[in-house]
Image 1 (tube, rainbow, N blue to C red):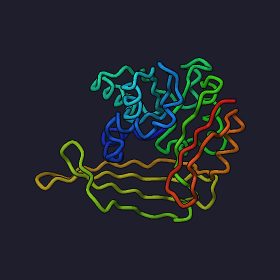
Image 2 (image 1 turned 60 degrees about the horizontal axis):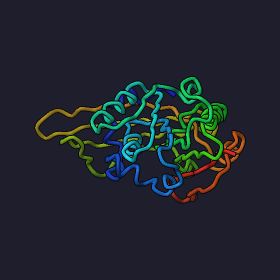
Image 3 (image 1 turned 90 degrees about the vertical axis):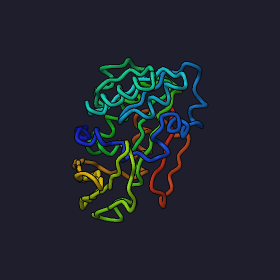
Length: 251
């Protein structure tokens, strides 16, 4: 899953205020975290800049964090050091996870932040889910969040410009999303994300990156989870909501 190397240095402008602090981000998963045993082994794959991984480590969990982007892994390691959190960081695509971790290693695997759509089509998505399932102990759980792609595709190609400035590190920025929606579900789609940092006393600093994605229907995800040996316990899917979460246990 290439990408996010250009955005890694400014990714905090894409994180909501509620999820910017590691402890607060981890707290959004209180319900599923309550199911874990003491000193549980947890993997945060597609860890981004590490807010969730560091928040989980702050709760006394044994945490590993992976991402396909070397720059994101570096930022996670830096955040871990800042908070003095013990997090093992590894650069790895989903398919490479079994090269770094033994089967049945984790009590819980997180794949959050709308990351699964970067897996290349149905085949790539199934391979990613299979790799994550392999790492779970029997009875362990996968926690996955996703955009509601049925809504995204219904809106078509478009330009979304934030109606407010986002303030991070003493600077304001405007965030822009350009959606390129392909004709068919199985085709490669594109999202261009641009972050323009603005300052009345200085120049505008802009970074942007075009990311490939392959959307999927909720029903497809459910079927694929079952194919890799995972049974859905709970989900928040609502066809009218922007995002949803699925918790699935390893059979």
